[in-house]
Image (cartoon, rainbow, N blue to C red):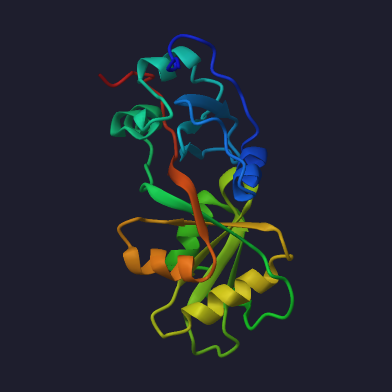
Length: 224
């Protein structure tokens, strides 16, 4: 078995790769890496699956730079120096577990809450996702919310913020908004064990890990 070295890094379609992983089909666990085009301008990422990693970076990043960073599918792509170098001066997000579930369709107990669209949780979602909508309970006095937008790989991604006991209702409501069988992602910090258990309890399954950043490579320097 050979590890990545100086060979050209193959390209993949990230959405297709993640949909396949959600269905239980993963890339070969051979330590290899692939690269994919960013799904949103100004957002890049590294996604690690079992024994394989996908580098979501712009065309200005040559394969040689990735090789020099020592990226591989056995953890090297998540080495801190990888994100530090590729983000440059840009903001780096936290390392998350990447979870997947499927929509259930049908009636939903949540409604769109435009009054919560400027909340910190909603603003955070806007930084990384597109077409973000904010949902909550019909009672305008309740400020717990769930966001639903186009996130990693252009797939639907959910986030939940609730301290009033309504988290289960919110997530079940979002799952009902998503067509039955459609892929739904969630990114959860492994250290947030309560949140991780919450998503697992609702049928989400881990398929990998992800770290995102807003690149700012104006100096072009490689960190050593």
